[in-house]
Image (cartoon, rainbow, N blue to C red; front, side):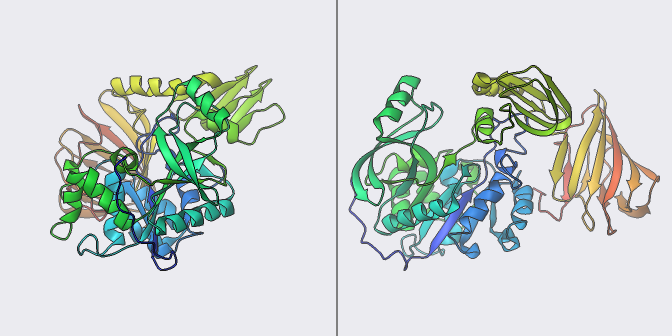
Length: 481
């Protein structure tokens, strides 16, 4: 690793501390619950709160709300804002949206634009913690204690990560090997190891010198930006020019690179704090089973499930009755439109199912039958080659964009509530059992002027019925390109 001059230590209490929560992932290892448009961090997999909400609640134990920044992408921004309002409404304006995914290093720099003033890059200093939003952490107070140690080390110029002592030979995690002790349960990092073979993972568990890489970091902004300038000059040029043009203007041209590959594995003097808390990245269904509350037969059951003579199974239903008979060591997860069944030792192959569905261009990878939108939601009730039937719910006071479609016409029937409909520039009110037709290439908008939810049935007909056949002219949620 290249050597660099050490930075002068700064008392930890003097430097302002900021937190960056990364909530832009779209992983599908927990398919069929996790989809591209509704990924793992937006799901409640352990308790009543989603993983994102649990992360935010934990970070609030160590950071002031005004110094917390959540980075997601445009597809998830409205749901992320909706979820964080349930924890702290003041953070609504602290959700930053990437126009497209460019991995964790550009996302962190996007957040640093809010942390540091738009002056010469090295003029200001802060302590920044970076936290994934889709991991499970137990013992919140122990997490805070580990974080405080990391902040003290970062204030002295160290780039700090947090390592979890492995309790099994996990081949799906990255590892790090510890070196010289720094005191208080912290060590220098000798090297990083990516997803080892099983034999190596067993060796790491037995040896006691390796940790899982938790993906959490703490650093001083000066140290971080110096590393970006040295190892990722294209990203540095983009950052250094931020006072001259909007950060998102050239975002699509940035390299797609993680903070690990971009700088962490290249700089010297990295420290690892041995985590004093239980951690899991809930990377597959086996992890959800392992951490779930089990009944007398060892089953973890969620939702509308009827289990007869089953043992050591994970049985989840999010749509309809799931009945299981004489099953053992099985994973069964049911949604309204898909069901997964596999043995415990087959969970790593779920990614193969997702890859096959992607190759088939299946919407089962992208979204659920019910899709949340900033104005409410819609559910697909039935569809065929030339038609699709939806149930649309519009929240009180909300309205959809002014839009039109090239390839489909639509028929709306009001089921409950009052609809304000604009078609071709003319407005009219509709109430229960009233209907209206919208032809192809006709501008239209739906709004709910009432105080109760509006529910309509929409019947689409035409040769192409996908969501990308929407031309928006005006939108209160900023989705007009």
